[in-house]
Amino acid sequence: MTNSLRPHGDRKTPSPSDQQTPDRQTGPGRQRDAFFDNAKYLAIVLVGVGHAWGQILDGNRTVETLYRVLYTFHMPAFIIISGYFSRSFDLSPKRVKRLITGVAVPYVVFEVAYALHRRVSEDPDNDISLLDPTYLLWFLCALFVWRLTTPIWQTIRWPLPIALGIAALASVTPTIGNDLNMQRVLQFLPCFVLGLLLRPEHFQLVRRRSVRLLSVPVVAAAVAVAWWSVPRMETGWFYRNAAAQDSGAPWWSGPVLTLALFGCSLVLTACFFAWVPGRRMWFTALGAGTIYGYLLHGFLSKEATFAGWFHDPAWGRPLGVIGLTVLAAVVITLLCTKPVQRVLRCVVEPRMEWAFARNPGEAARGRERREKNEVREARSPSGTGEKVSV
Image (cartoon, rainbow, N blue to C red; front, top):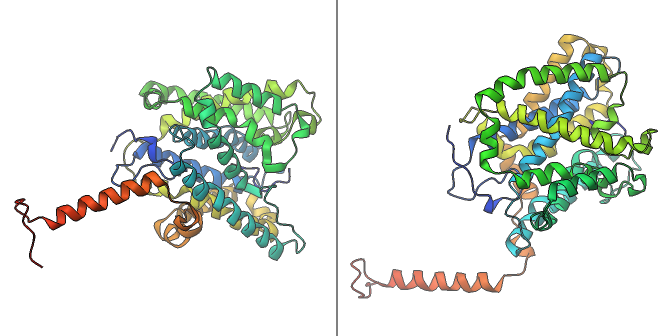
């Protein structure tokens, strides 16, 4: 999902009306869609695995090959799901409140927490900057910007081509700088816009048996291409956090690789969705807690890096790689569980009713409901209109 600390069933299509983050899938009383919960859980596990692999790439061509395949699709898959569940976003007070409490507030809290963690563990002089997202927090910045622009993409005639054009222009504009990690915000924008355009039938389309079978040779071909690319292409291209000129490449390579990576991401994401189970699994419930796993596992990855834990040569051996992969998957899984959600909901998904002005229309509707309830309670159970003795 990020650059891995490297310096540079129960099927029912959910209504997106109550969406905020990819983890708030349905409102109270509505049945969650097992497919999307499964997809989110599997995607977040791949995020943790990718961050672990990112620390042992040097000199290990096999791991770097798998790492490149993973980084081609796991972030786009998560962003596409985020876009899909942002389809109903508008600038109404209800949804703006959820955007603030579900995205902006966690960003501020965890940006400060990550900065303080680095001060304690590595750099006592590390600054706290809300404009320069630390590590994986760029995604919250991006999601905030993307959600705010959702009404625009739903209004214009050719949203996806325009988003691709913006991403291509960003890839040749080194002056954009690092504020809010805007390069990633713009270069991953087409994935979010694509999610806005998708409908339930599109997900059903890629989950057909024929697509599932076809995905096997496609992924095999992707692995072969990634193996070939290791000595010929910088890994930094897959992070999409810099312009072409920043990598010493000619300017025209930026738009070319932007379009090529988007196409490859789309194909591999379709292969990923094709193999996501549609029925309830043992891990389905964990899909509701992926934002917790995402925000928290970075502390462990950072601490392990600061402590030099990844320098042990054992991690470069086959058994070491397998062990590290399993460990990352287990850690992510534990961080998505209900106990973790209960403890940290106050900072990850705070309600903060005290911070918002009361909507006059909502207050009037509340008074009307209370008056109706009082009338019903004052009447007898038989419905004759007689007062109940108290």
